[in-house]
Figure 1 (cartoon, rainbow, N blue to C red):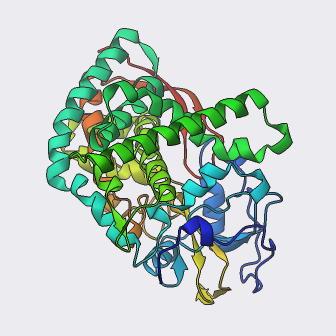
Figure 2 (cartoon, rainbow, N blue to C red):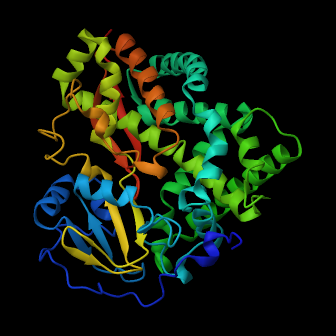
Length: 442
C-alpha cells in the first residue's frame, strides 16, 4: 500500500468524544486537570503524579470540552516502558503524539498538518528509513567534532553574561542561545538567520494555549502568531528545497533528499520535518539547561560535590535530565483491544505516557525527588523515550549540558537561581521562558 500523509489519515478528535469503552479499574480522581495548561504554570505536578502512580497508574482522564476525547494516563515506569516498546499495539501514526489537537474549528491548519506529517508520528515500515537519514549527524564521532565548536560558543555566551551581570536572565542570554547555535550548526543554517529561530520558538511554545482561547484570543497577538508561523514554514521550505537542488554536508540536505516508499518527501512532510527539528532540537535542551540551574541551587550540597569532583559531571547530566524531564508526555493510540495492569484499553483509545512521573517512580529510583549527582542508575531515565522512537538527539543534548556546566561551574562557582522564573502555558513541554540567576562573586 502506498504511503499516505499522516494528516490525511489521523483519527479526528471530533469523532464522538467519549468515555472509555471499558469501565476504569482504578476508582480515583486526579488532583489536577492534566488536559489543561494551567496546572503546569508552576512546574510539573509531581505530587499529583505520585498520587496517580499509587492509586490509579492507568487512569482515565475525561474528555476536555473543545479539546477532544479523553485518554488513559500512565505514570509508572514499567507501564510506560511496555507501551513504548510495543509499537504494534500502541501506534504513533494512528493519531499523532499529542494528547489532543483541539477541535478542527480551533486549529491553525498549517501548524496542525505539520505536527502530524513528521517522522515522530510514523510507525514501521516508514519510521526507521526516514530516521536513518538523520543518523550521520548524531553519531559519537560527529558529536565529538561538534563539541569543539560548542565549547567555544559556551565561552562566548558566558562572556556576555559576565558583562551584563551580576543578575541576568539565563534563558535569554544562555539557555535559548546554546541549543540554537548547536542546532543551526547541524542543520547548516546561516548565522544571520539564526536569531529568527528563537522568536519562532516563543510562538510555538504558546501555540496550544493561544489556539484554545477561541473568541477570547488577543487579535494583535494572534496576528503576530500567524505571521511568525508562516515565516517559519516559508523559511524552512525555502532552505529544504535549496538543499534538494544543491545538497551540502548538513542535516537539512539529508532531510530534503530523504525518501519514503522510494519517493522524495512531500511538501507536507518537508513542513513537518522542519517543525520537528526546530522544536525538538531546540526547546528541550534549552529547558534542561535552565532546569539544571534550578536543581543546583535547590540542592547546594550536590553542587558542592560536583565542584569538588568534576568527574561526576557526566552522571549529573543524566540525573538532571531525569529530574527535569523537559518533554512531559508522549501519546500513543491503541491499534487493538489490550490489557495493561488489569485495565482493558479499547482499540482507538489514547494512551498518554508521563515521563516526569516515570522518572520519579520510587520502584526504580530510590528517594526519587532527591537530586543525586552520583545516582547509580541515573542513566535509566526515560526522559528521551525508549525503543524505536527514542530521541535521536539525546547524545547532542547530553553533550551540550556537559559542555555548558563544565564551564559554568568553573567560571561562576557561586552562581545561583534567584527564585524568579516564568514558565510558558504548555502541558506538553516544561518550557522555562525566564530564569534569573546571580553570577555571584568569583
